[in-house]
Length: 87
Figure (cartoon, rainbow, N blue to C red):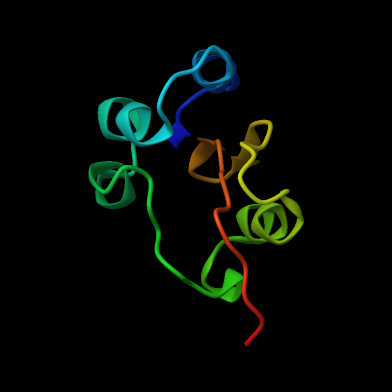
């Protein structure tokens, strides 16, 4: 879920922690129109395809848990990795 500010990211994170649905919040709030429309789903993609901050977060995030806000040149991301495979 991509938002413009850290305050927005923290608000969305609070909604998620209160039981909000990741896919619904992504569709409603994400600035990334591609993945947002897909409920935040980026598919199975190599971290090398992302900006460094986002890539590092995808490699280190616990499976199934939403990260704290991750800042990149695009804004603030909340990331949930559902699975991870080795190439």
